[in-house]
Image (tube, rainbow, N blue to C red):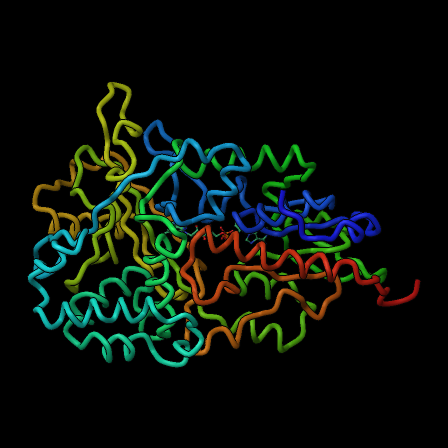
Length: 464
Ligand SMILES: Cc1cc2nc3c(=O)[nH]c(=O)nc-3n(C[C@H](O)[C@H](O)[C@H](O)COP(=O)(O)OP(=O)(O)OC[C@H]3O[C@@H](n4cnc5c(N)ncnc54)[C@H](O)[C@@H]3O)c2cc1C
C-alpha cells in the first residue's frame, strides 16, 4: 500500500470526514488513497455510474468504453493500480498498426521501413521529421517549449511540407482547430509518451486492454472502495460548496440535500469547479475560467465488417467530418462483440475534437450520423452504410485543457482560499497528454499536500 504520511503523523492525526466531488478515475483514486490513509471518505458522482470519460455503454450485447481507451505497456502507474485490483495479469498486450490517409489513399506507417516508403513525403522531409522526433526526445524539460507555438516549433524543425502532411493531421486528431493555440510542449509530451517504453526500461511499446474493458476495471475499483469504507453516492451532483461557521465545508446537492465535511476535494473540469465553488476569490474564478477546454463529439460504431488493420488512422486530407479513425477491434478480438449467432463484429470510434464552445456539440444526432457515414464511405470504398449495426454519439464539453502558451503559469493550485476546500483536476497535468496514467500521477502528487493541509488546525470563521 502506498503511504503518504509518516507513522507518527498517522498515529496522532485523527481521521477526518472527506468528500470527493467527481467519480472519474481521478476522484476514485483520491478516494482510494485517502481511505488507505484511514480517512472517512464519501465520493459524490453526478452521473448514475462511476468512471466519467472512462465509463462504458452498451454495444449490442457487450458493455464497452464510451470513448476509446488503450493502456500502454509503459503506463506503469496504471498497471500498478491494476495489480492492486488483482487485474493486471489479465491484460492483453499486442502490437498495433498505424495508418495515414493522405491524398485519397490509405498508407501504413507502422514501422521505420513503411515510414520511409510513405509517398506523401520526400527524403528530405522524412529526414527532418526523424530529426524532429529525435531532437524532441532529447529535451529533458518542456518548460521552455511552453513559450513557443507548436506550429512554429514544428515548422522550424520539420519544415512546412512535413508539418502539413504529417504533424497537422496528428495535431488535429488530438486538438481539433485548437492546435493553433497550443504550445510546443504538447508535441514534446506526445513524443515523450512515444518514448515512454524506452525510458521505463522496456524493449518495445505495446498496446493493451483489460478483457471487459474499463467497465470491468471500474466495477472492481468500486468494490475495493466499498471494502475500504468509501461511501459512493451516485446520481449526487454537487450544486454549491461553501464554508460553514465552524470552519467546515458544506456541499449542497442538486436534490437540495446538504452534507458537511472537514475537507472537500473537487475533481471536475475547472469551469464546473468555478460554478460550484462560489466562495472562491475573484482571482481564483478568473484562473479557473481562463483555462480553455477541448470538447469532443465521438461516435461509436458497431460494424459487420472491419474497415482496415490500423488501430489509429490519422487523416491528412481536408474536408472530413471527424479528426481520426480508431478501430478498436484491431486490438480487441472481434469475437468480444459477436452477436447471438456468434458473428464477430468490429468496433470503430470516430472522434471529432472541437473547442468547448463549438456549435458541432449541438448538432442533431441524425446530422452527425449522416456526415460521419458519408466521410467513411469516401475513405473506405468497401464500406456501406448497411454495415452499421449500431451508431451512438457521445458529446463532452470539457475533455481536456488546451495546453496554450505559458500554460503551467496559469493553472490553479491544489489549495484554495476557502479553508478545507481543495481543487485537483486534469487541468493541473502539465507537459503531458491526457491519459489515465498521468491522471493517477496527479493524484499521487496531490496526496501529500492534501493530507498536510488537512492537518493544519481548523479555525472557525465565526465564533458561535
Ligand atoms: C475520446 C477519449 C479517448 C481517451 N483515450 C484514452 C486512452 O486511450 N488511454 C488513456 O489512458 N486515457 C484516455 N483518455 C483519457 C481518460 O479518459 C482521462 O484521462 C480520465 O478518464 C480522466 O479522469 P478524471 O477523473 O480526471 O475526469 P472525468 O472522467 O471527466 O471525471 C470527472 C467526473 O466528475 C463528475 N462531475 C462533474 N460535475 C460534477 C458535480 N457537480 N457533482 C458531482 N460530480 C460531477 C463527472 O460526471 C465525471 O464523472 C481518453 C479520453 C477521451 C475523452
